[in-house]
Every structure is written in structure tokens, then in C-alpha cells.
Amino acid sequence: MPVSVARKIAFETLRRVESEGAYATDVLHAELDSGVQPADAALATELTLGVLRWRRLLDFLIERHFKKPLDRLDLAVLLTLRLGLYQLRFLERIPPRASVHESVEMVKAARKTSAATLVNAILRRSAAELASPVAKFLPPGLPPAERLGILYSHPTWLVERWLARLDEPRTIALLEANNRAPRLTCAVHDLGQRAEIIRSLEDAGLHVAPGLLLEAAFAVSGGSPTRTDAFRSGQISIQDEASQAIPVLLGVRSGHRVLDLCAAPGGKTSALVRAAAPGGLVVAADRHDHRLRAMQSQFARLGLSGASPVELDATRPLPFGAVFDRILLDAPCSGTGTLARHPEIRWRLKPEQLAEFHSLQSTILRTALAQLAPGGRLVYSTCSIEPEENEHVAASVFRGPSLDGSSYRRLRAIEAAPLLAMRLAPGVDVAAIFSQDGTFHTSPAAQLTDGFFAVILERS
Image (cartoon, rainbow, N blue to C red; front, top):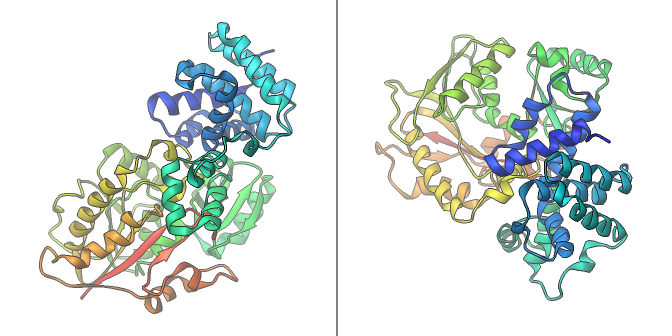
């Protein structure tokens, strides 16, 4: 019995994530071209991202039966076991016998025939204990962070810091949210065509649900929107609702000079281009030329020509003679607000990197503020939920002198909330996403979006 297309794609994607440092969504996007059947594409995505989300729990269960450190296993064998066990534990629609058999065939196809007996034995033992909850197998006396880290498949150090900041119920809610497949949400580029676009998507067989944060947004399921005419013609883009909200906070108007300092992949930039037209200027900057080229390809799909791409290092003084009315700094960050969407991040991120990101973000923010016109507005945002990258970066600007002696102030909630209030979906409480000090924040657990942070600064 040959290995299915979906499992082959999932195996190869996981191999590249582990051995090459690739991102799963990027590999899947390349692998799941129009030649792959929708059912195979859906299963390949489920297997890949599911294994990455539950990797720690899967490894804990595998090691129980292997009885040796897992680094003794060849990568191909370990990936086969993770895929097989994920199907046994989490995909009830696949019979256990089929999961075990296809896993054995997979390890043979990976030229590890000598491991077929081991794979068969471990997965059969695992199948025999499916009725038992995982908590039953945990050693007694584990510290809370270690216990939750295994049960919810997160690094212990991340769980420890969330427990200290959020308490246990909210931490568990966050862990659970990070292990759910996120909503696949779309941005509509012409609100006047929203109803027509939704009808076309439903006619194409997709299920459409209303946005939970923004009235104009919507979520799709039952297929890929990238295969629809609405996507190909540039009427919609795939973008998380919290990400869609960030450029709105700038309050860009026609004729504004706008700088998007870390622009790629360009989802927020396109909103800025539309808001600044006609007569505005949008400079889309990024450090990497290949990311700028990819962004320009997206602009071509969207039919946008109003962005000027510039390759630059934002940690150095910017090469502009003029200042800007609006600046968006969606800063490089740890991405801890996107662990459901990019689960491999949780296994790559190290505690010491938070301080490194803080230093980088603070440097770029000061550089950006030096380019802001008097009376201008800057939005600093991240897709992180860590204070070191968010509140602490914003606070550092006010602790030290600015580069040119200028002063800045933060917009408080009474000023910031109205910028977004008219765009919110019915029933969304503005107070739930804006703190009194004007900080914008979303949570995978509370809003079912990516975890975003933003603060709005004005130059006086």
C-alpha cells in the first residue's frame, strides 16, 4: 500500500522544518499547488501543523515506549512516529490500524526499513492505551509549569512566565488557544463589493463566517480562498483580523506621506496605500531584497502601484531627507502571539532572545521617531504578547532623550479607541482591546485572533 500524497507532503514539510529551519506554512504553500486535491491539502496541513503544535506531548508518549532518549532515533523515524501517533491521538476519523500500517510504509519509503518493526511496535502499544488520558502517565510531583508544558505541549519556560503574569486559568486558556487551528480570515479591499465577494466564495464551495473583531473581515473554511477568483483578482487577501486592525490605528488620510518601516510581507502596506490615495506617498521599506520582491508580486495581484519599495537597515539612521506624516513600525519580534499559526516558533525561541528583541526594537523605534514630522503619528506594533517587546519598548522611549530633543506623547484610550471603533464587529467591547493608557492588545484566547500589541505615539 503506497503512502498517501497528504502524508508524503506532511513528512517532507516536517523534515524541512526540523533540518533546514524552514517555516511550515511557507513549505506547505509551495507544496500544495493546484495539482493537489483539496482533501489531500487539508489533511497535509492538519498533519503538519498538528504535529508541530503537539510535538512535546507526542515525544513524551513516544519516549515512554522507546525507553531511550529520542535523540537516539534517526530524524526520519522520529517524524514517522510523531505523524503516526498524532493520527492515533487526535484524528478519530482515521482507523488506528490504518495509521499504524501507513506509518510502517512511510518509514520504509524513507529508506529506514530496519526501523519498521520499531515503528510498528511503538504505535501498536500507543494505540492500545488511547482510552487512557495522558495525565495518567505523568510522573508524580511535577512542577505546575512542567506538567502544563507536557499536557499542552509548550516549552516549560514559556509556561512559567505566563503563569507568573496571567494566573493558571488564563494561562491554560492561552495554551489551549495556541493548540487550536486559527481561523482563516480574509481582508476585503473594496467594502462595497463585500456581499458580492462572499456570494462568490460560497458559490465556490467555501463556508463563510462573520469577523469576530472587524465588521468588514470574514473567516472561511472548507477550502482554500487562494483558489478562488476573488483572491486571484485581488479582491481579498488572507490576513488575521488583528493584523488588519493595525494600519487603521495610524489614521492615514489622502495625501499623507507614509513610511512602513518593516513592510514585508505587505499586508498592512496595501491598506496604507489605499488610505493615502490619491496624492499620498507610501514608502515600503525592508531589510531584505527578496522580501521586497515578494511584496511587489503581491501588490501586482492587488493592482496596487502606489508603494515605493526601499531596501534599508532600520537600525541605522534612515536615508530620507523628508519627514513623514505617518509611520508604521510593525517590528521584528518573537511572534509569541502567533503560536497557533506558526507552532514551530515555540520550539525555536529561547528565553535570552526576548532581551535581544527588546534591544533591536528599541533601536528601530528611536530611529523611526527621528523621521516623524511635527504633529505626525507613529504606530509601534508587534505580534508578540511579551512585555519586554511591547510595554517595555514603548516605555524606554520616554525614559531617555529623543535623538533630536523632540517630545512625544502616547494617545490614551479616549483618543485611540475611536480610530477603530467604527470598524469593529457588532458586540466587540472597545475596552477589551484598549487599555486605559491607549495600548491596543488582542489575545488568541480572548479575541480568537493572533496576539497583537500596538501603541500610538504622536510628535508634539
